[in-house]
Length: 446
Image (cartoon, rainbow, N blue to C red; front, side):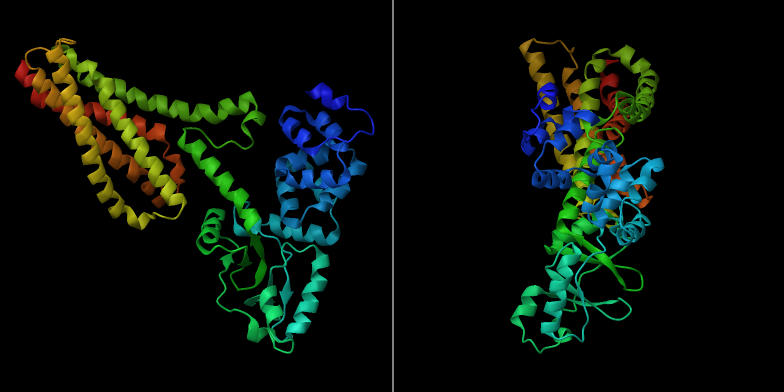
């Protein structure tokens, strides 16, 4: 496919969809060749649709005399993303391609953390003064369209110190009398976000209030920019991807899967695997502690995988549900008691269901002659059933509480990955199982 792309006849235009399909398979030089074969209008649309790291790679792969138009095509917030995606040594090179006004805007954006509202916002928005008439405001907003504003749906009413007083939509302006003052038409109950608000919290505000844009203000109430709906859609996708990767038991990837080098992939995954492996060593230690019990009744070892996997599965379910609920704002740290109460009830029910199934399985297999568990098979069934009840209850409870505890300590709840919860429950599951066996089954079979 790469050869076909490079061998396209000179002067022949390449469909943007074909280049999009092949993009991930091409190296930097081939991407430049394909990009040059696009029609000008398609090239603009294609470039603006690329992820920030792809835009960075493409600009830096172009000859120096071709870079400036593409860098200046980007709005300030996207230009800031492109600069952040570049290596530290090349950021100044990209910044120098901007005009003076854009460079100042981008520099102010880069002062914010990348995942804060200030790092997401665009400093270009329609602004009006409260003392303007409606006709003056419409005329003024029309002039601002030429300034490449992020959106023109709303006009933000600012005082002389750039403090946000209210917001007015084009629809409100056109439906008002021309001589009326903006102050009489504007809405003052404006939902704003602090410039230091985390992007996940900003995403939740968009979801709750169904808005096209949110104004960003500093600690003094001065308006700094706006975050639009299309900005936050990408953020939500990135945050969800990061959480899923962490829940799966690895560090979040910094680039698409196929673009991450094998060495970097190993580094991202090895840390958690080592932690989980060391945790599983405790399982071997626990089994060594109950060596006499296993030797006295070898049949107990048959059900070890059944017991510990059930606890791990229940814990993984609980931690996944709670982490997702926290990311959506449905559960907060202060809700810990409600979560605990629900998971205790769920753990009892789920553990009871699995415990009954485990007991019936042992009794049925004994009666059918599939396995011979000895004369005390009913007590073995009771032991396995009660152990399942305890392990599933503990797995469910610990899986639900760990993300809340991590958030309370200031860590990312997604760090409570499902494999980590399963490993913790494996160790405690063995303790619960063999404690139940020592109390119920071994005394009978001795």
